[in-house]
Length: 277
Image 1 (cartoon, helix red, strand yellow):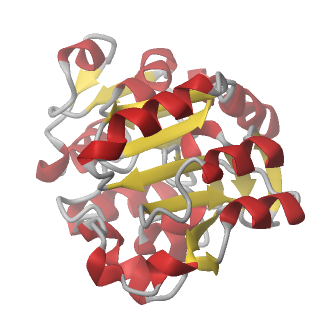
Image 2 (spheres, rainbow, N blue to C red):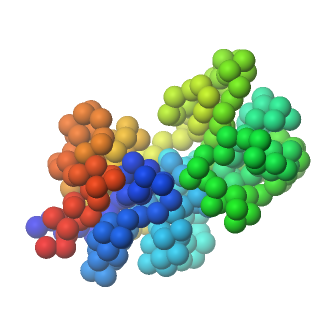
């Protein structure tokens, strides 16, 4: 039996149910069982901190978070930012100007929070709000500003990532090209109606190195669970790398074990098999 001290956990397509908000009861039982045995649960996700699943956010024993695809590593027990790689305030403002004021629905992650334009927040019913984000907006957790570009410059805030949803067809190609023309952007998850992008210099591997330095151990002591190309490195390098059954073949090929799909409690299956027996 390998000495596993932590579980690196992806969310979407891995540990969350189809609603993309909650962890299933069986998955939660397995994860909390690992915590009871002194094994760290470390979320490693493309999500910003304020968009974490409510069950994860509420569990104080889960305190190391790798967010925004490695944009920030935080210790929630102390509030310390262990590592971050962001757009500069100037880059952030430039990107905001490409579409702000055009009534395009956007969620901008910065400092672990979500910033949105005042005009968009005035009537969410007119915009393509992702279904799994409704809880967040109903709770009023977003920070509303008139012009994000001016706000980030004035407050010297660097953005972690941008999510833009429902871009009108006539604006898609022009906006995508303008974003890419900046030269410092990496797009993820396709580009069309919905666009997600991070700083090109942002690498999850750097975030993981900073976290492991703090923990005092590395991949030789972790189980990693994921389903996408963003998770490939942490799956292939882990002592126990687990791909969900819904992962593409390229990800399953680098895993030590292929578990059940995310919506069939694949996380629980793997944890029960390797850590709770």
